[in-house]
Length: 273
Image (tube, rainbow, N blue to C red; front, side, top):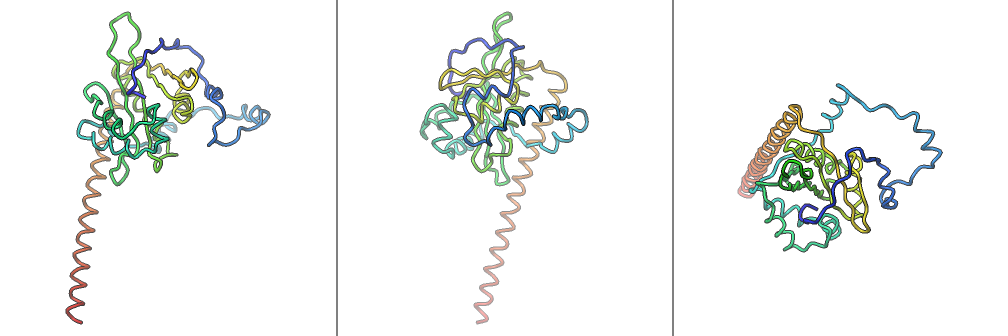
C-alpha cells in the first residue's frame, strides 16, 4: 500500500529464513484447493524435479512474457479509471481501508512520477487491467539504513489468474535494484493472501502483526544484465502498446467503412423498391 507512510522497523537480516509455508500463519486459503495429506507431501518430496536452468528456463520465461509499460503523468486518468473499477472489497485490500471515489482520485493525483515508478499491463482494448505502484524512499546517506521501496498492486477481476501480479512484482524488483534499492517492502492486510503469496513466492520474509502484515525482499545489486533487461522490457512494452493502439485505430476504420457501406446498400435497396 504505497500511499500509506508508516514508521517501519528495520528489515530482517539478509539470511533470514524464507519459506513459502510462511503463509500457513495466515490461516487456510478459502479460494485454494484443500491441503494434501502430510504423507502424500512426504512421498512427493523426493520426486520434485530440479529447477530449470539455462536455455530451457529462458525459453519458458519468454513464453510467459507479459508486456509491461511504464506509466507517466499522461496516464493519470487511466490510473484513476482502473482504480475506480475495483470493487469495494478490492479497494479495501489494495489500500487497507474502504477507499471512496474521491480518495482514489486524490491518491492518483498525489503520485509523484518524478520520484516513484508506476507500471501497467494493457489489454487489446487498451484498458489498464493491472497496475503496480513502486514508491521510493530517499536514498539514505552512507552508513545509515538500507534504501527501500514500497510495492502495491491491483488487478481487475477480468485479468486475474494469469500471474499479472507476480509479473509486475518481478518487474518492480528489477527497476528497484537498478536504482540502487536494497529492499522491497510490502505493507498489506493479513487477509490479502494473493499479495502475501506473491511476496512469499519471491522469497520475501513475511511478519504478521494482527490484522496487518509486512514483507521484506532483499534485492541483489544491479548488473549490466539487469540494466539491459530493463531497457528491453521498456522498449518491448512500448512496442506492444503502440501495436495495440494502431490495431484499435485500424479496427475502428474498418468498422466505419462497413457501417457506411451498409447504409449505402440499404439506401440502394430502398430506392429500387
